[in-house]
Length: 337
Image (cartoon, rainbow, N blue to C red; front, top):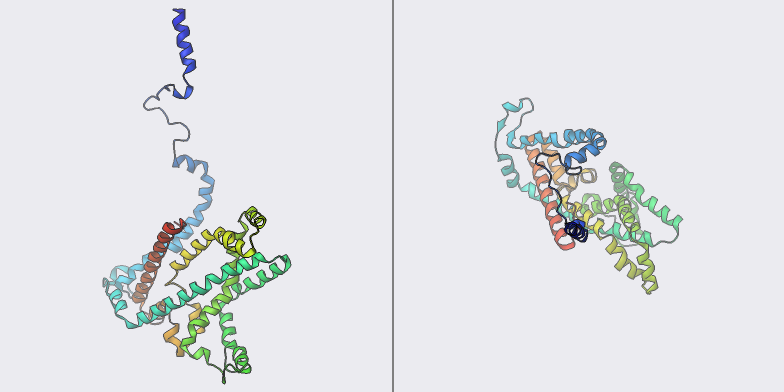
C-alpha cells in the first residue's frame, strides 16, 4: 500500500505542471480578472473617456450634425419653408449638374491645379527637408528653417496682394527683371492671361507651404537610427548614397501617408487662392469646384444645387482616399486605415 502511494507521488512529480489537468470552473462562476474585455478597459480608463466627452460632442455638433443639410440636394429648397414643406425632387439637381458644360470646365481646372500641386508642391518639401538635414551649421540651419515656414502664417489675402504687385505690368519686379535682361521686349500681363494662372497659383502655394510641410519630414528624418549613418560611413558610403539608401527609405511611411491624404483632396483644394488671385479675365481657368459651389449656392441662392456640388465633391474625395489607401497598402504595406 505504501509502495503504491509512493509510486503515485513520484509520477505526479515527473509530469510537468503545465500538462496536469486543471480543475474546471463551475458553471455560473464569475469570470476571472481580464476576461471582461472592453468594459474592463473602460473602467480602467474612465477618466480619459470622461475628458474626451467635450471633444466628442464638438465633433458631433460641427462635423456630423450638419450632414443633415445634405437633404437639400434632393429638394427644391426654399429658406422660408420648413423641412416638411420642402418639395422633394430626387436626383434632379445631380442630373442638372452632370448636364452642365460649365461643371466639366470647372472640374478640369480643379484637377489640373491639384495635380500640379501634388507633382511640384509635394516633392519640393521632401528635398528641402533632406537638404536642411545635410546642413552642418546649426545656426544657419535654424535660420533657414524659420524663414522658410514663416510664410505659412501669412494670410492668403496678403500673399495675393504681393503676387499681384510683383507680376504687375506697372512697376512689377518680375516684369522689370525680364525686360532688363532682354528676355521679353514688353511686360507680360500675367494676371490677365488664363494660360499663366495655374502656374501662378502653384508657385504661390509652394512658396507659402513648403517650409511648413518640411517640418513634418524633418521630424521623420530625426527618428531614423543614427547608427545606420555611422555604419554606412564606415563602409565608405557617400552622402548621396546615405540619402538614397537610408534617409528616403526611413521616411517612406511618412511620404506614403501624406501622399494618400493629398490624393484625397484632389477635387477639394479650397477656393481662397483662386478667389483672391482670379479676376473676370481668367474665370475659365480660375474657377474650381469649391468656388463653383460658392457662386451657385450662396451668390445665386441655389442652395440645393450648391449642396449637390458639395456632395459630389465629398463622395469623390472619399473614393479617392480609399482607393489610394488600398493601392499603397498592397504595394508598400503603408496605409492610414
